[in-house]
Structure formats: C-alpha cells, structure tokens
Image 1: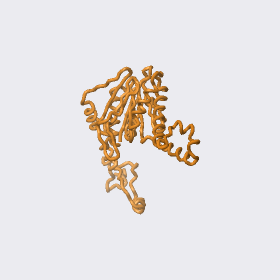
Image 2: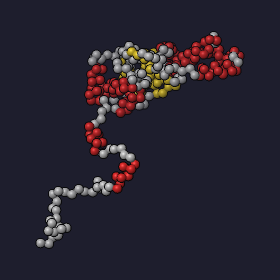
Image 3: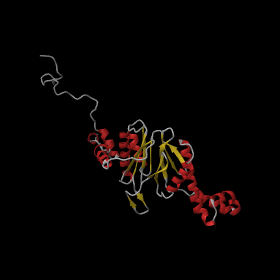
Image 4: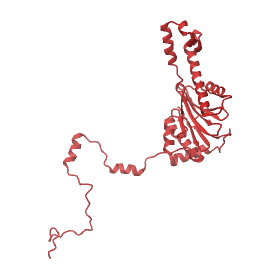
Length: 303
C-alpha cells in the first residue's frame, strides 16, 4: 500500500511519497525512500508489491542513457529498455534457469533444444511472468530545462503526463489524482500552491492505505538538494485536517432532512396519491390581506 506523486509548477517539480514497506504479513513505516536518481537531471519513484527488481532497472536505465542526448525521447527509450530487459532476465531465470538456457539461446535455438509441446509450455510460462505491480513514476528535466513526467509499468509500456502536468502511482494513486484534479493543479500553479496540493494528495492517499510518514522533494533544473523546516509536513497536515479535508456541510444535511427522505412499500407509495397534497407552487395566503366578514360572504362591497 503506497503512493508516489509528482507535479509541475512552472520550472519546478514537486514530489511526495510515503515511506511504507509492506510484506505478505507485516509492514513498517518511515523506513524507505521511494525515489532514486539515475541521471544528472532525472529521478525514478517506485511503487509495487515487490520492488526488488527496481534497483537493477534504475541502474540499467542510467547505463543506457550515458553518452546519449538528454531528451525526453532518449530517457523514455532507455528506461523502457531497462524495464523490459530486467523482465526478460527474470523470466529466463524463473522458467529457463533449470535448463541452463539463456533467453537469447531460447529465442535462437529453442526449437532445436525442446520438443514442440515443451516449447509451447515454456513460452506460456514466460508470457505469464510479470513484476508484482511494479510501477515507476519518472520525472526530470531535459537539456532545454523543460520539466517532464512519465510512468513505466506492465510489460514496459509508458505514458507521458506533461499534460496535465502531474501523475500519481501506487495503491493510493487514484485518491491522490482525484484531489489534484479537484484543486485544478496545473503547470501554471505557483510553487507554494503545488507543494500543498501534492501533500494534500498524499494525505488523501493515506485513506487508501498509504503510509502516514511523508517524504517531500522539490527540484528545479541544476539543483540536487532540497530542504525545509522540520515542522512543514506537520503544519500542512494540521491545515489539511482543519480546513482542507472534505467534510459534509451542515446546510446539506439540513436540506436532506427537509426533503422528507423515506423508504416505503409500494402500497404506501401509491396511498400517497390518494391524499390530495397541496400544490407547492401555489401562493400561500398572506395573513395581512383583509378577509371577508361573516356579514358579507365573498367580500361584497354592499353596505
């Protein structure tokens, strides 16, 4: 149960995550950083049920990017290549390792090594190998100092989030995204607004099971260190809980009470139509209007 969030604010990128690690039966909070740099201007944030493959993927992505232009296209290509190669390596280890056959040998000479039935079974097993919910939220700056955000997941497919300028991954990602859309977060928001929006998204994701501890990181092109007063997160959480967290307005509850909300049987519902109900649109009599006297029914003008 986790969340990672990144959002652009002009030349800045603001990111936040929890620090919880969950196993099959146990979990612990405030113990794990979920972002890791892999190039001079690029970071990868990690979520998943099993994040063990994450470090090799990030290391490979950095290696593939060396000597290449710092463009969004090259970074995406390098990261996807690293993801897919690590998945292929894991599939080879799990399925072909007992035969001492590499994936390259299997693709080149599999038909010579295995009979048709065994080959088909092995291909099926390889196709069923997946990372356990592993997702990367990758963000950074190209050589033109332009910020970018994209995700990599599944079998290595990616999605770019330069528009709307923010993205969230992990089990709390939907809750966080919902709040960022609610706040109309965009690249045109200033840094202070975006810091609050991202942290509020993290707080909302806690209701979906994300850990309570919050790691906040802000960066612009050419920087590598971010610091803030130790009480910032606590103060933002207090402001969120007192003023920002969604709550039911008292007026809404009163409106529902006045609406005569009720559950009925069909007979009770039909019986309502046998009783003449006052027309809610008809004007009510004004008590100040003169009423006809008993001596002149109908309000006659005769004296």
